[in-house]
Image (tube, rainbow, N blue to C red; front, side, top):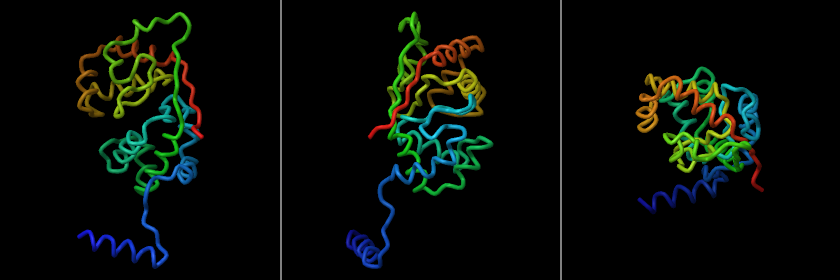
Length: 192
């Protein structure tokens, strides 16, 4: 088996073809041009219904885009966009946005101990995720957070942890959590 793989790869190289290897953030920046209207070229969302994606882990972004592509997750715009992307383009654009760094700070007068305890173990006190499979929430628009939590609560969006947590939340708690993270100051910078 190993010999067959080496032979095929060697043949591709001799024929002038190159197999798709690792992600390429430079190519990903080209793909990101179709994302910039909603998410910004740097991943700082331009509209309140779109999440900030700059600085998210590459694996998280790839998983979300593949979920939209396969229909495991649905959204009227993202399902259409992701369905047009190849696996390589998804990997590249995820690498582009992951090549940014998201940092956050709490606004003046806000105490860390007031952070929503249900959220901080995955999403962090300041909204910068401490778990690779959880998105950053820092600086997200209230509208976006409320919409996502309600989707988890009613089962329109499914996740082994979030669905269970959201099912127990009242509308008031959802608004409080959204308010907390929307007030956090978010900065996204490009790693060089």
